[in-house]
Amino acid sequence: RISTSLLRRTLQVSAVSSFTCLPFSGSNAVPSFPTFVGRRRLDHTFNFSSSIVPFAATMKSISYADLSAQNSSTSSAIISALASDPSFVSLSTHETTATLRRDAEDAAKLQVGIDVAVARGVLPGPDDGFVPEPYAKIDVAGKTPGAVVDEILAAMGGVSAAAGKVVVICGLSGTGKGTTCAKLMEALAPNVSSWSNGNVFRSVTMLACRWCDENNGGVFNADKVLTKENIASFVGMLEFGKFNGKFDIRIRGLGVDALVSSIQNTDLKSPAVSSAIPTVAGATQGEVVLFAGAACATMGDAGTAVLLEGREETVNYVRSPHRFVLMLSDESLIGKRRAAQRIAAVALASVGEEASQEDVDRAIDGALEGMVAEIQ
Image 1 (cartoon, rainbow, N blue to C red):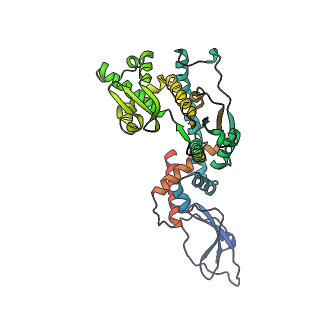
Image 2: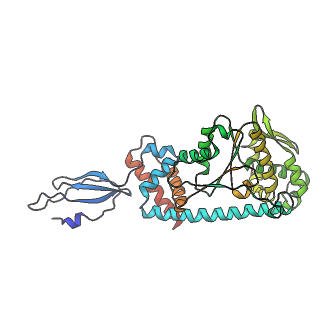
Image 3: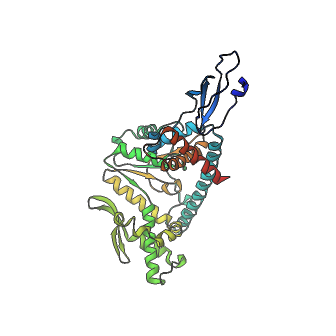
């Protein structure tokens, strides 16, 4: 005999298994109790002459289609399914703390570079009367990327009004800057371009490494190579414009004559460049920001809408009245989104297209537990 109270306790099991229970003497009662598939709760009806019959899921499972999409819908589905899971709460809290700390550290490093540029007279500072245009704040909590894009376009006066304009998108990690820019690219296509400072920093770094090859026996020495004069010379070797019908950067100097698009995955990602880029980036913030501003203005003058994603510390110097900062009124969503993205990527890698729902559930649970083990 099994008491009703015992049957109503919560069991933790890896999958639904069939078993038979002894019936109540003289009773046809059919009690129910919660159990779990992986970490997803299921309510079951017991028929005491046979076995467990699942009838209602109180926590939604993530389908293979949702998982394989690997987009904001995937993250939302995982967050919804695991919101009350203690392991997910622990992981997402860890991710929130780590992301906010990393963002603060990155902002401080960028500001040091800007301060250096201001001190050298490359960029204007507050004492020179410099004040960036104000940013419009957009709370993205509970909004789809499409809704955020609609809000941005409405503030600018619509798609047609964006032609020839520079649109600046800022925000902390996890607020959806990349996804928003991708959706904006779709909305403004085909007359739209995006800009990133990454390849400019890599181009200057490659030239700095070549200078060291020619003048310092191939040994990178920041004090020798990163003088104000040398930095100005390296940036002067970069030309932005239309090449072969497309906007690109041409590098000419120190034995190099190439378009960035043709070497961005080879020479610009060499071990020497990757090793030196943090040091070079810290010393060249001002020059690169000015180059970016001029490039964006060139594209805008050609009637192209330009999307510029970055940190406020640097994009403040790219002049534009169309400036937006994405924020989350609930900062815990930063960690939840990041945790969900990580779980989705690991889980998808462990299942195939023919995966059953149980396979997907187990993959998600396994990814979550593995990540939680790493932070304990």
